[in-house]
Image (cartoon, rainbow, N blue to C red):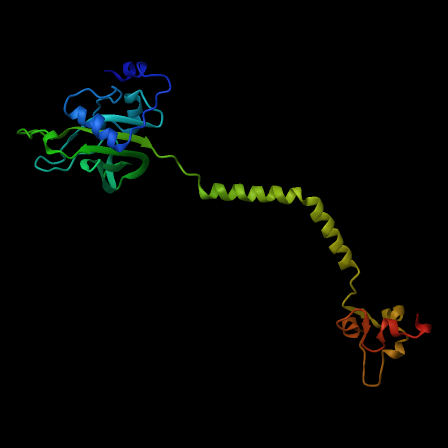
Length: 264
């Protein structure tokens, strides 16, 4: 039955998401024994005559994944390796095969493959993935005829395209823009705190000043208290040395609070 016609007989809201066991027991096994499937939804297509991006049009059913019954041919006349070359590339097996069980019975094998564009071994990897299901029972394999390259009459393939993951660079740019937005929202608070810091920096004493500048400092007292016989001054001196580590303490005169009343 044609895929377009069979989809019109499906009930509304129908979704085809069978398990691995259901694909083997109810679909692939029936197909191999020429018995009808529960629903005629999987078309017969030789997928190796097409590139993967051409296959969705051959299915006419499915949005993100597509199922096909397909034969497999031998790569070499006397070998058992399948020929998986297509028009523009080839399917390459990846990972290990998965055994499919129905209860305790070993009924099938699931193999994962990735499509590469170009010729092996220098093909470029794509986002197209295939899960290939095949039966384990030898009686379902075709009898090799003289000159025939047929390996299997039917295997069942599920094909889909892997979703692309966002690049790390894009995530980094989004994070940077988000941080910038947060800093802009708090801009008024930052500006007020910066204004306070600038005011505090404005009242700091300069590191060096001329000697004449000291006469204008009322809280230092007479200049005689600053001079002694063993001290010589240049044209400028370090007020930080006089002030010491504590701004409120004069190293020569003493704390500001201990000045005589005539100095205040």
